[in-house]
Length: 262
Image (cartoon, rainbow, N blue to C red; front, side, top):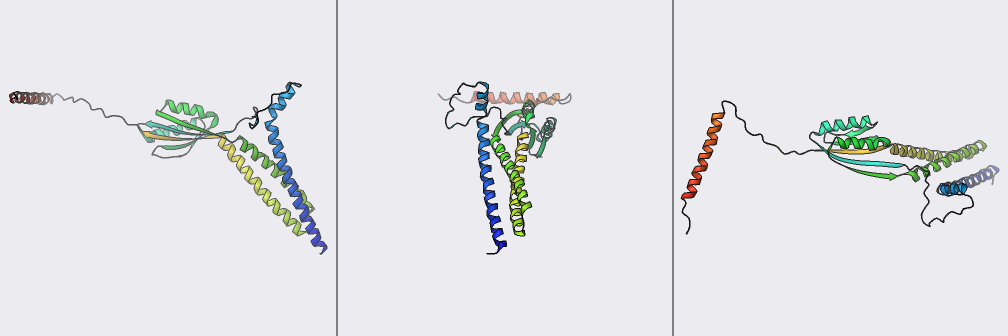
């Protein structure tokens, strides 16, 4: 075997062992960080009251970190009625804008999809309810706290791996060694872009709640107005009523003359 081949083979083995070590250390570090989050309350209690043993935790139930702010994605579906659909659609869009929101899409058929800042969601729904008829809403929430924290850890580990690979790239002596390190760098860079995109998506989804409004036509019974004749029409109106009375009289007389069965 040639010296260059031996050197390349040794470098490949060292690079593989190094990447394996990074992966193992990243995994163990993720587990340690996750465990430290879950045991944060217990650690604080031991500092506040040393020498007092804490009550044992129930098995199978992960301890909740009270200091951790939950990240929730809210989705709301609203149904309401209005006499006129299109003006109501425009009114709802203007109302959303006053609360810092905006319309993603809407149609003259009465369907509107809005984005409302989470901190203004409750006030927006309350105002919409006051200005609507036959209002109903369906609110659902999704907790993405653990997913966000896990993505943050993966992003941090990938960034550290990229820094270490850049250091290895500086020590590469041959073209083959350089190409191998660059190939690993490309994979790590793609992972970093993917984790950064996911964090951005989760942050935007938490900050802006999705509200879908369905406006339906409000049905109202038609009320017939009582006939009011004009000055010239009164004689004809009274004549019409009189003929009606005469007709009723003839019908009554006819019924009286009909022989009754014995």
